Every structure is written in structure tokens, then in C-alpha cells.
Image 1 (cartoon, rainbow over the protein chains, first blue to last red):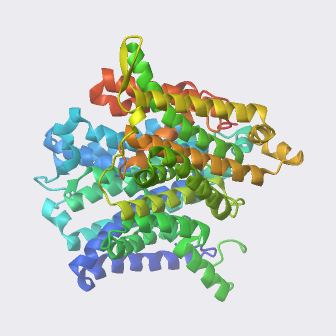
Image 2 (cartoon, each protein chain N blue to C red):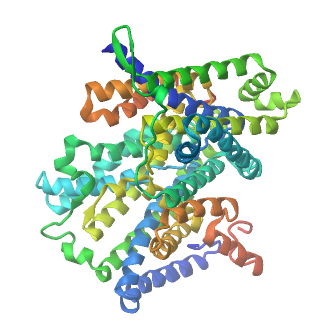
Image 3 (cartoon, one colour):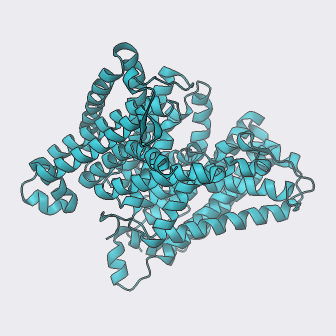
Length: 334
Length: 285
């Protein structure tokens, strides 16, 4: 998407087109869309980020993480607790929450990426449920608020923005949009780097890579840490935007929503999962009104894996290629 | 005190054995973990609730497993067989999605509040063994768990279909070359594993509560057990279920504040020592 450019002429063209798209997308919705639509779109962006973290691990390392919510919700809880209980400034609390969650992800990853992909999937589910139980423990009720969750209001500013600014959909949109672009481009470059190539090779045949002298363990741990960092950014932006954290943000529901968003958009590349997040947010608004969000999630998992394994974006790209052969081929000519 | 603790953990482990060994059986044949197993257990519990109201507990214990076996057959023909050529991760995700759908349909029909059924008269009350008074229903649970262990072992050990199941679990390729039809076996194993989930669901009724979250709780517990036991190892799953039941019960007695975390600590310890689990599964090559 971001230019499978092959000639030297098309690289700047892709960058210019990307910059224009980025600029327009950051500014226009603020004028065109209603507050309600923007609010949904903001949620969609953040879900898209979480989906991107799930999708990156799926498409590059062949690992499905069902514990994304524990990172997403956990960073929000730590941010809130660091300010209310330990008196940190908002900026320090964000950095602390981010680092603490990523450190947790590193330890967990070091432990569980050694297992096979199926066991990895089960273990991430178990670890996610563990975090949800920790938050609900009676002993930490004063910190986490138990089932009620926590209201997060901070004094002072982060990067010149007050709590009220983050809660305003119009002001939040450019932040989310920028974060999505930065992370999308970063992950896209990682997948084209040596690390991405190694990950895909390990995914296809771990044994052969090991025999060929590659370290198959460290790249997967690094990838796991990377996607957890993305999930933490998504969680922190979410808590800034929503102004509260609840145990639901740690639940299996959030993890499966992210998975569905990734499958909907298509797990390959950065655009698919992000688009999937937006699609899911608007679909959820439609179905959620009838209390059928979970049903939507379950049905979407089955539908997209069985019938549309490439997702909406992947499917569209394939359809365009079929209609207009010769346009923007990813491989082939050099 | 210790005797009571062991008895309680055996009662819990009985349910877990029925569910986790079903998971391990399907994994052994198809290399797929059925993430919808918790929903099958939940379906068993709610069907048990409805059927027991009409026919009483004993008939429910007979009818519900048969119904669930039919669900297992549907699962085999509509999901596992058509998706045979897809990656195992994808099939596992499909079972996760189907489990969510099934759970939601059950909640849609029965509503969100918890239900309970009473044990039949002969199993209510308590019995005194060696000076200890103990609920009869839990004794019954332990006997059922023991019974299913023994019948599983006899089946796997002494019948030809059991031999074939073991052969496919050990080496699918060679087993197929020897003329074993793994599709037919899979049909048997999937329906059997669903039927066991049904039995566990009915048995859970008078023992635990029947509520909308029961599928998630159970599938997470079972996944932990399957990983601890070594994925695909049935003996490992049984031992892990016993271990799990014990730390769960002991945790709630000695460490009531953090009891919910004890199983996860167990999981982490086992993973640190033996990443492949305690049994001889096929989790790590």
C-alpha cells in the first residue's frame, strides 16, 4: 500500500501521496464529521492499533496473541494508579506505565515464545485472564476500584493538552491519526527489514532456520515486545480519551475484538488491521445497540477465516489487481 | 483437614479430567485445540438444567451427553473435516469463534442470571467416612471422575479403536500409511469428547453454579491443564488436572486472598521447568 515502489521515480511520488493523505486525514474529519462519528472513529483508530499489534505478530511470526487486552487495559490501570496513588505527574505516569507494561511483556514473551504456536495462543489467553484476576483481587481493591474501575482525571498537561482536550473527539482525532501513521509506517518498515524476513522464515520452518545457524528465539521475543509496545500505546491513548479504566478493558472481549478487527481488515500489512478497527467500531455501534456485539465478534471470526481469509483490504487489493493487471505489482520486475 | 482437602480437590479434578482429556483427545488426532470446549460444557450445563426439570437428574445425565455427542458429530462434519487442509491455528480460531457464538445463543435463550439445580435425593446430604462428614454429591463426583479415567484407560489400552487413536496421536503419517482412517476415528473422538463435556456440564449443575461466564472460566482452566500436562498427552492431562484441582482447593484454603492466581503461578513454574509440560505430548519438537 505504502508504495511497493520499484523505480526510483515512484518512491518520492508515494511519499508525497502519503504526506498529502496524512495531512488531509488529520485535518478534514474535524470539519466534516459530527462529534458522534468522530468519537466512533477515534475508538476505531485505537482498536485498529490494537488489531495492528495482533496482526503483525500473526502475519510475521505466525503467533496469535489472545492476551492483547491485558497490555491494553493494564497500561491504562498503571497510568491511573501512578498518578492517584504515587503522585506522579501525567507525563511521568505515561512513561512509567508504558515501560512497566512493556517490561511485563518482555518477561512473559521470554517465557512463552519457546512453545509452539498453539500453546502460545493458549498461554496468552491464560496470562490475560491472570491479569484480569489480579485487578479484581480484594487486596488491591483500593488501588484498582475492583469491578467499578477507576476514573482517570489528571491535572496539568501532556504535550500542552489538558484532560478535557483528550476527551474532546475533535481534538483527539489528530493525535490518534498521527499515532496510527507513525506506528503503521514503523511496523511496515520492520516487516521489510532483516528482522521481518527472519521472523517469516522462522514462521515457515523454525527447525531449518535453527540448523542454518539463526537464532530463532530472540527475534520472536523482540517481535512480541514490539507488538506489546504498540498495544500499550493504544491502551494509553484509550485511557486518555475515555477518562476511565474498567475491568472490561482487560477482558477476553477486547482481545477478541482486536483479533476480529485484524481478520476483517486483513492481517498482512499495516493498512488492513487499521481499516478493520474502523470497520469494527462502526459495525459494533450498529450491532451493539441490539446487544449482539459478542455475537458479531464470534460470527466475524468464523466468516473471515473460512470465507475471506485475506480480509477486506487484502481482498480489495487482490480484486483491483485482477481487474487492472500490471498495476503496482509487489514483486516481479526489479 | 488434609483428607478433606484431598477429597475436595479430587471432586474438582473429576470435572476437569473429563473436559481436559476431551481436549487432549481431539488434539492428538487433529492437532487442533478446541477453544469452543468451554461453550460445549456450558451447553451441557444449561441443557442439563432444562432436561433435569422435565425428566429428573438421572435421565438428564443420560440424555444430555447423547445430545452433546450429536453436537460433536456436527462439529466434526461441518468444521473439522472441511477445514482439514487449513492451518491448525486457523481452525483453532474458528472453534473460538463458534464457542463465542454458542455461548451468546445460550445467554440469549436463558438470560444473564445464574441458575442452579438440586442434586437428586439420594445424593443430597452427607456421608461419614473415617469420622469425617462429607457431601455425598462430591463422593459421587469423585466416583464419576475415577470411572471416566478408568474407562478411558481401558478403551485406549484394550480396544482396537483405542489402539488406533494412540497410533494416530503418536505419528499421524505412519498411522495413515498402515491404513488407519483418521477421519473415522476423529468422528468417534470428537463426539466422545463433546459427550464428556456434556456429562461434566450436567455434573457441574449441583456442584458449581450455572452462569454465563462458566465457559470462559472452564476453558481457561482446561487450557492451563492441557499445557501443564503436555499438549495431546491424556495421562499428562489427568495428572495435571489432579495437580490443578489440588492447588486450586489448597489455594482457596490457605491463601484465600490470592487464590485466583494460584493456578497461573503453577502454570508459570511448570513452564519454567519443563516448557513442554509434564507429559510426553507433541508440544515441542
